[in-house]
Length: 201
Ligand code: TYD
Image 1: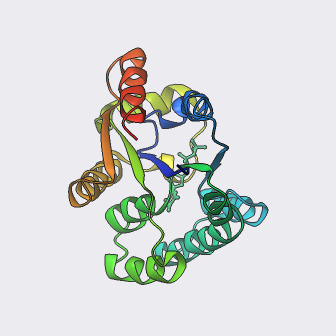
Image 2: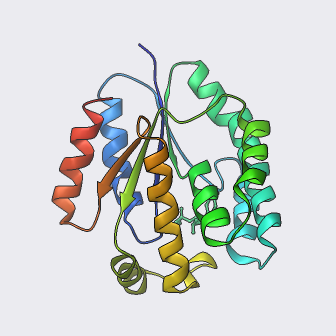
Image 3: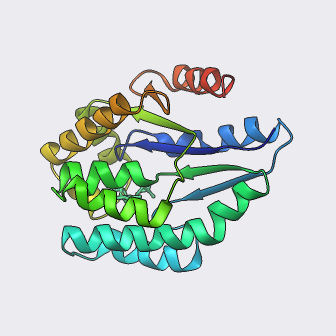
């Protein structure tokens, strides 16, 4: 047995980050090393790029290129080595977010993202992607209630709606990898759903 590459996705405000400590605990209980990381970020360089990406206005294709620059570093120094030694890697966002935000919401052609994906990842894909799905109004309400918005979180409902649609389309196109979780229900119910899914992987 060896670990797996698990990614968490969803709109801002879907609540995915809330589940990370519990997911780590469940995977560790199986006796595996768990590497919990995030994108953009996950390395010292990636975290510096994250600062720019989340706060600096830039062309959507510049944003895409920087996302993949950070991802290249992340795979080379964190994700790749961890998977090679049999660890579970849990990443708060990965390439599906680039398809949802930069392609779905901002209009960068998918064909360009596919070229970068092939370059940076070769064959590497998550084994399982948990998509936390909520209606746009719920996500916007949660965001307004909880934090100072970053660049992405200041966008309007149409932007969020395009992200949601793009994620759901990715899930439809990759049914073997995606598990779509209704994150609009009570937290205890979402936790139970996440645990039920983890029990199957
Ligand atoms: P997020 O993961 O929501 O972190 P936090 O909970 O700290 O706000 O923030 C990352 C933001 O980056 C989010 O708005 C989505 C965006 N993003 C992209 O636009 N493209 C990408 O490829 C990735 C990984 C993230």
